[in-house]
Image (cartoon, rainbow, N blue to C red):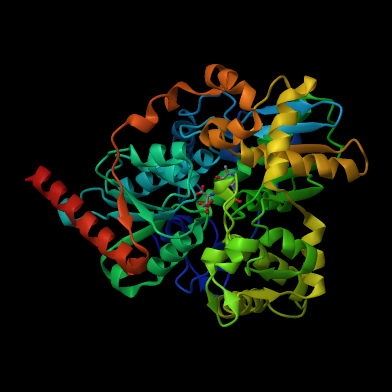
Length: 547
Ligand SMILES: Cc1ncc(COP(=O)(O)O)c(C=O)c1O
Ligand SMILES: N[C@@H](CCOP(=O)(O)O)C(=O)O
């Protein structure tokens, strides 16, 4: 236990109960039983939240929301406000995450989440997490020198956006080394350049032969490895880290209030958030907002052709078996289950080319708690039972490649969420039609945001009442994925270069880079070797600087 009074206790989705503070959960990332941390209680909103919060800035709203989860005994109010202020001072929009209306007749809006330093929604959480790590380390290292100082070894997996956002959130920070694994050759050219052109000594890029899921598995293997955990304090920047989810809750509230201020939306109207989904972290923050009391009718999961979540919402079966023609045929077969490489399809929305969505485990816990709880049982027993269910499902996923849930679990999931699967052709068509629509003023969508808009339009066709407002999350700037934009708008690339391409991206790809290559055969142990060696070099350099 830390010396700071815990805001609330955290549980592991796999049944463990931990007396950890917010600080410990943020620094640990993953529970030692392999589960993800979840807060014991989802706090309810204060009764006057709607009137009291409606005119708050993004930063003020973040403070109110975070304060429901973090007690001032853990982070004093003035310190939390300062962390929030510094985290969002790096954004190019004063509103941090503005909401714009794309189609007034159909009530389709876009929540623009790409105004941070790396032009992707990940900045909202990772600017905050970088400053949180720094805050905790400064506090822990007061009066300590040399090797007695606590050092964080941050390990992350990325399909392109988390990596650059984490690197920009942590570059140059004292007592932190950051190692980011990306699937070699499978991120966009701009994403790769964003990550590998950062040459700060504490930043390490690893290009791994394999898929994003392999990188994510390597992260989990390192967290479970007793050897590295004996000598290194590992920390997570992926959305397995609870602080990532917490930070993302703010923009659901902020957008709701923006909608009320900017449009004909009345608090009594119906609202749906549409979220392009891969690892299920972004939409899980929406689920927390809804459970806290934000009046959201449904959360819409929008997947690309890697549609494990969409298939689950249709069938109650969560299966990673490949269903994609040629790639599937080329896949490996283990116990009748085709392994990853064949299961992931490379699409025009590469950041969502994910087979297994890590945060889905958190939702499963809540569904299981809701459905299987017996009212007579003690709360601790009910929590443990939910953890047992999740552990069994996850074991089946590992051993058999999938699992199925009972009808009641599926129905509970369908109550809060609906899903759509969007193909590459539909992505291109949506970028094109949005650009050409008279109402949307040549708006250029990135392919991930186009997946959201396509799903929003389909949901709008069937929504009752027809006045339902859809807020679709624009998760990245189109310049990060110019390949898809170029295919959708071949005649308008001059416009794209002159009007859309940010100055920050011009010349980026020509800058010097640093990246190590991890070959397939080296596996996660190969990554461990690189991490241990490079952290030691950094620590030696710090020793020499202090002599
Ligand atoms: C641009 C973009 N859109 C959508 C997603 C999906 O978000 P999540 O993984 O939180 O579901 C990601 C990455 O995860 C992304 O980088
Ligand atoms: N799309 C992500 C994949 C990692 O997801 P995370 O939200 O769990 O960090 C990326 O761009 O890296």
